[in-house]
Length: 254
Image (cartoon, rainbow, N blue to C red; front, side, top):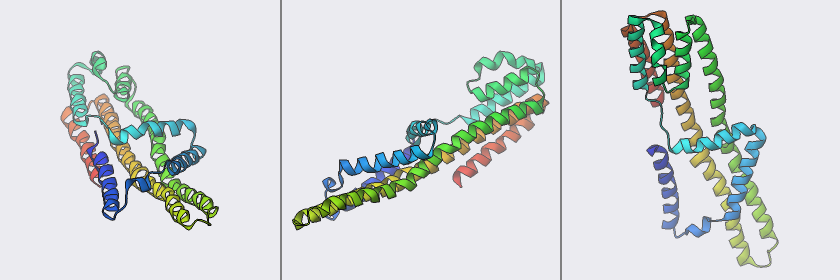
């Protein structure tokens, strides 16, 4: 579980609703099913117009990843690559064929298979880099879905507010109902702004960070496989690969 994401949502909603209650408001004042339908449905529809269906569905699946995430154990992968380097240095690159079954990451397994099959280092780098670029292009579009949703949601909220005001104008003969109707109408605006700023835009930022971390690990795998194939000293390989971990940690902090 991502405690930062869960804690952030709880803190934001708790602070906003808590302050409203302290001012004498009630949860019922902002609990409007119709407003939620307008904002969520309208935002989702606008995003579907902008993005192909497969990307939209991939973004929906990634929502779980905002709150629950198990990243690759980069330290374990580094140690595994160093072990492979030591074995290849002693017994040759073909000796790694028996270790392929222990490799769980598909990207790393493919690289090692190419190396064991005798592919030239330059060709291994080219093939793995091409796959990495293609996968990254797809994964980069998922945060864009949430960014677009963050842009559409407040505007759809305004549409909901205007629709509510239209209904209010039909009951101008009852001033009490008009006051209540206006309050209800603006709930849609609250939903739109909250959906954008409390979830969609932060989720896009979190997914971008995750994507950078995963790409960094994949690049470390690529460099490790090529270095093993080139016959570099295992200690040199370990030193080189640790620069990826240090760079990735610095980017995450930044």
